[in-house]
Each structure stands twice: as C-alpha cells, then as structure tokens.
Image: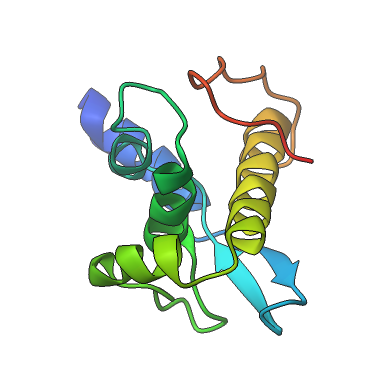
Length: 128
C-alpha cells in the first residue's frame, strides 16, 4: 500500500461506501435504498447554508434515493415534481428516515464498531 495519506483515506472509504441501507415507504409501495454519505452529497443537500428547508428533503431524495439495483430513483430535473406534485408529508417522512438511518450508521461506525457521534449538521430535522 502507498504511504500517501490520500491513498489510505480512499482505501478506507472503499471498504464502506458500498454498504446499503433502506427505508420503507408503504405510501409509495417500495423500499428506498441509500448508501453512506460522501462530502459531495452532503454539500448538494445542505447547500442552503446548513438551513434545512422543504427543498432539502426533495434534494436528499434526489441525491441519496436508490432502487434495489443501486440506480438513482430521481433525476435532478424531477425536483419540481417532488416539491409540487408528491405528497409532502411522505417526502419529508422518507427524507427524515434516511437522515436518521445515516446518523445511526455513522454513530455505529463503518465496520460495526463503536464510533464517536458526528457533529450536528446545522438545522437538520430530527426523525419523527
């Protein structure tokens, strides 16, 4: 293995990034799968200066929601439909459930061991 710090960091993440988690949406009749965060994904979801808005729930689904095969469920261009034509309570519920699972996953540690809790992400909502 290389002695470069970036190589060690990337190798560590490669061990964990393919883990998949899921939440169920009975309203939508499907499981919504997702993987652990990347910094780029967090930046896309929390780009409003860390302020959680309704748009953030839609953005989280666009960035994180996958089907059972690992394909994204939503395209960027579908944000308007998620905001205006989808049940807002279910969009928020699924987004909150994903956030809650991601927080639990991070707190548990990538390899199932005990890990310190991550610092709070601005104004993220608590799961209901």
